[in-house]
Image 1 (cartoon, chains in turn purple, green):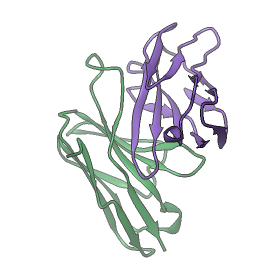
Image 2 (tube, one colour):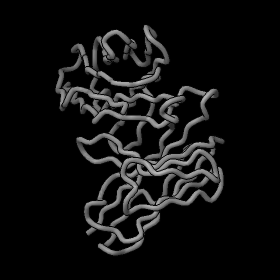
Image 3 (cartoon, each protein chain N blue to C red):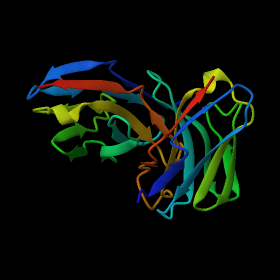
Length: 114
Length: 115
């Protein structure tokens, strides 16, 4: 079945450092890919998404490119802030073969120090 | 007001008690989901409903049941709670295929502790 694997955390960075969180997936169809973010004490919210190969999703300085050839969707940010401290989830959803059931990675906790 | 509202936000109960978690949404979505979050395990799907008459089991439905009372309401019940059901529970909604990309809209979560 479909699956998502993301790098284990926690990841600890200093403010203004470069962030990469790796995510790879396996899927039988043509899924959409997502990054969700969970701030402390809150529910998950969509950070960015990409719906087809080579699409780049971006939001709040974060970017991720849908790479079909490497089945990856790595999250990057050039300069993190303390306010970026959160848990980040990579996910996929295939509306036609997966019935829109979203598959999540285990999550990566990010700590950003001032 | 939040588009997806969960009640209660926090609940402590004892083993063997019946618990209901409620979810209501104002997004007008047909599809609703219940997920469970445990540290290091991401989110696991408990049940999902594609419309009022359609309810499906997810990955970890044992020990849980659901009720879709209306398009906007989807409740999760633990008939006899046990300690390993201690977790954070999320309700979510999504649009139908063809109307969206599968993005999920989450409630703020219900933290359940079973003693």
